[in-house]
Length: 533
Image (cartoon, rainbow, N blue to C red):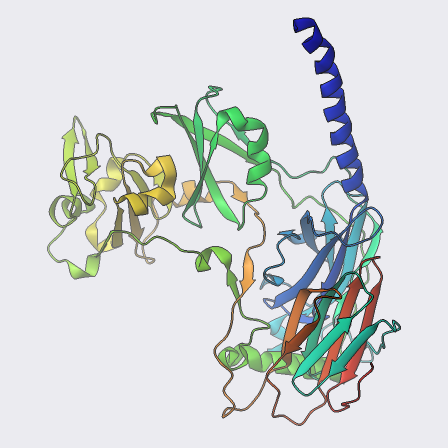
């Protein structure tokens, strides 16, 4: 039997290696199909996207991939990076441009890690400083305008119709298609941009990594990874160490991180070293930095200037996004104490001793130790809680227990099963969060700034704005942006929007990605109610 196993094992390992090599070979040929909602932006604007994975033959696949999206300036330097999972099509993809961008041309470059291809789209970004200046930007050309798309579909197997407030599409022969639609005022908003696939400029060795170096190799131990900015904990067993980094690379949302190791009984082992590769060294080819500045661009920018001041009027489904983790069910603390509600308290220690329920402070040699009791029980935990001091995790207060009370904004206590559960094993003895008033220095600020920062999967999701009010002036430059809709013979699509009361020529722009990887685009003004069938 042992001999048989010895014969089978090398074959199994060889087979596994062949599968791995084949998978890597396929991903190396994968491409990204990218649509950018506009070509004109102001620093700090939100960029709506549609990212679709294409297989080695250029056909759309629903399996999805982890996509790195680089924002690159004209010198080829990486300014920012976002990561997307193209399998998540339940919400439109988007990211925020950095607010400090200077006026110039920028490229969005999308790539699946390890792929031989990258997809580029050129956008024009303008600094808000142009709004307060009468001079033309040095790199602006007043005779240069943005690209205008005028296209009609060339596929007789598709039936489509445009009405005043809806767009319908159906097919009886097309097996599969992915639809994106934008309805907008071309005098106030740029046309969408299609990305161009090129050979990758990144070396295959340049791979992102999320490496954990624990103090112990005990396979029965556990690692808790705390995402400070999100207040979330993910936990992993050391016996699954081969998949830990892969799972962490798929975490949704960016955050500073801190990790700790526990044995199988929950006893502390020590802090885990976290190494995250730096994305800032990614370099691409340089390109021209002359931005268009004709009358159409000036009009678009003037409209964006007004939006900066009365943004709430323009808030629509197109540009209303928020982080996914803010929408998720965040468990509230069991108790919250605001310092302004309590007088006559000198220090944080006195607050825990006098006003915080289910908390006690005991002297331990030359220091003080905080102990909590469960919210619904009379006994005390055997050890101290996890302490989040202005978001920085610690297990002992030390001298911070004597922090002046007037510098503290609030104390939050998590000591019920439901609230502690979000912190995993880190919160087994309860959690206390102390928030300082912003006018006072954070004593752990330097430590917090040194935590490694992880760029997770982009977690911006589109949220529904308030119901459209027909009694107010309609100042929307974009009536609709929607992407990732699936079209099949059994599944036609009709998208609707709130019609505008402004007498202008809105444009319906649509893109249909077919199963064979070919894209069909067409445009039509809403004043022309003709249709093709």
